[in-house]
Structures are given as structure tokens and as C-alpha cells.
Image (cartoon, rainbow, N blue to C red; front, side):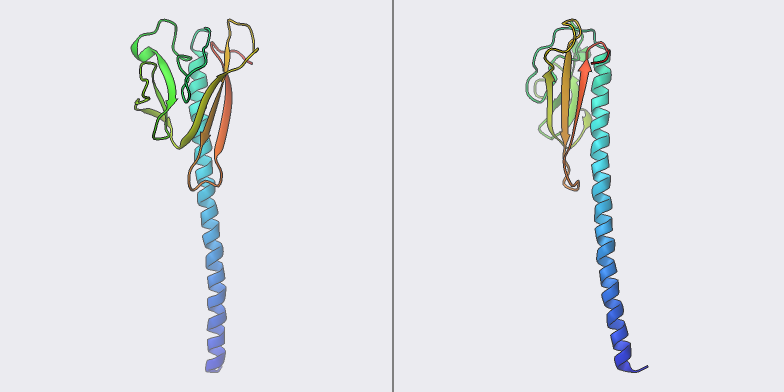
Length: 163
């Protein structure tokens, strides 16, 4: 084997290794993006299930349209005082927080989801009798490593039941 043949073999080997390196790099980036996307879905489902569970435990009452990025007093029992007056809201740090209705600034410390870029609670018109009001909760989560935002929506009926 001559020196030229050896140099050609080393060059071809380096090219093949460089190509494999970029393929491995792309695979790792896809794995990170997929993992982040799954984490967003997990956080969103956890938050919605927590709110739906709370709704099932609250006696039916008339609902008013809440302020932007909050659920208002939807999950607070009638005549509640203090910590029993539960509300969910999105704070300035893009976190979904469980707090009390007295916390207009959404400064609570019980964070149930991070990376929340949009949160809304809306009344569902014409669903069920007046004594069993229903609402829709929507949550959008975004992360820089995730390929796209995750939007989850759930319908809730106070006091439980199906829609």
C-alpha cells in the first residue's frame, strides 16, 4: 500500500465520519424537540385535569364571563372566603397559577404549568340546563425547543356530569 492510497483512504473515512456526525446530530436535535413537545402536552393535560377535577367538586352556579387569562370565580364555591375561593390565571411569567379570587395580580405561588402563552375560559352557550352551566378551558404552551405550540381544550360542567 502506497502513501497516496493511504491518504485517499483516510480522506474517504473522514468524509464518511463527518456525514455520520451530522446525521447523529440531527437525530439528537429531533429527540430533544420530541421530548420537549411531550413535556408541553404533559403539562397542559395535568393543568386541564386539575381544573376539571376542581369543577366537578364545585356546586353548580351561574357563571359570568371571566377576565382575560383567568377563570374568575368559576371554581370558587358560593359564599367562599379566603383559600376556598380558587381561581386559575396566567401570570406575567407565562405560568398558569392556582390562586385565590382575591389575587387580582395573579401573584400566587402554586404553578401548575409553565410556558403558557395563552389561556382562556369561555362560557358555552346553550349547553345543558341553567342549573348545570358549562365552560370551555383552552391552554396554549410553547417552548423554544419544541417544533410547534401545543393547544389543548377541555369542556367542564360544574358539579360533574357529561356535556
